[in-house]
Image (cartoon, rainbow, N blue to C red; front, side):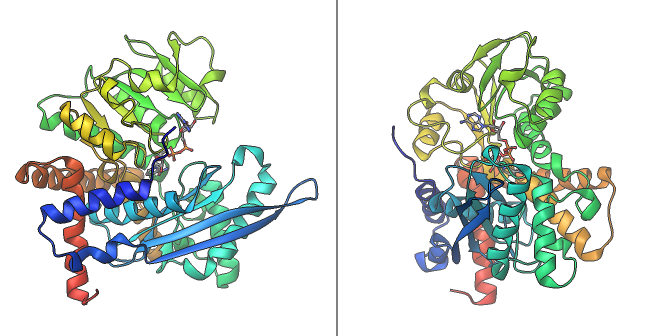
Length: 416
Ligand code: NAD
């Protein structure tokens, strides 16, 4: 099976956007490299008394526009290339959303399903102590990502605070509400995906009502996006997770599925839902109008892109479409709302959480959701307009918008 290099995907689009903007290489060459990469080894005492060592990473791609910002992923396939690409996408995403952050990402190579709760806590505390020198409310602010939860962010916040000498809620976002989390943060990425889909339909003179949607991934992003799209009148015909998928051309019982996956249970453990069992590959190729890949990167590749039936793709996951697949889909006339715009809701509300932490004053949920809607709408329109102006894709348009913003700050600060 072909392996995909996510960082090469990032570089290909970055260079393409810089060319379209007629930038001199010296204006943006620094963005081809992460500013700082930290690799750590986390020894963890297991419940049976043995010690296991887990590799971890924290990569800061850019701090040009503000402190570095990005999630921490726990997954058995995490490696330095993946974390580097995810960090770079965060710099672009924060610039597209126009929030005052650079980009970072972290990861630990672990399958958290194999750890007990106590082992997971010890791993998180060890990892935090090892990345402590490079994180902080004004330096680099982690958040949840694949397999990391508000509770894990709570342990991170607590461990950092011990070294810091006082409670520092602003060091991490996506925390439980009781320790400074923001209302609306857990749902923010999925809600933003729903906004992105709605904004796209509005541009095309349609609405979400009756739109046939398939969603890959029933975790934080996919399940919230699916339930909100369903509640806005879309028909969710397909869903999947790591255990496989379900399809029903007349629409699945999304409320039932949401109640099930919200308890972090697999779709394969769900009984009595009227739908056909399908594989993840079939989910991606299923008969639908809008496809929302919201699981992992490199899901739509040159191997399956020509079989995709959806006319629209809203990327909930980071990097779900490879560069080759992007070209094939473009030739087929598929409109893609790229990850760096579509899943920006999470980091936007993370920014609101950080602002609330810094001012120790907390907002109500409707206010958070309204601000999120405003930010997403503004970013969507800006990307749409620049893409139209240059007769290009929304992905290239989003990169162009972001690079313009980052390069402009570099010039004002006189940074190379
Ligand atoms: P999660 O751990 O909550 O859920 C991941 C989901 O994907 C699970 O349902 C899992 O079963 C499924 N999955 C895993 N491997 C799969 C496979 N091979 N095929 C099909 N499904 C598979 O993670 P999440 O937080 O929802 O993140 C999903 C994606 O969204 C990631 O790319 C992440 O980087 C991105 N993202 C997350 C956030 C956030 O706020 N959580 C923000 C922006 C982007």
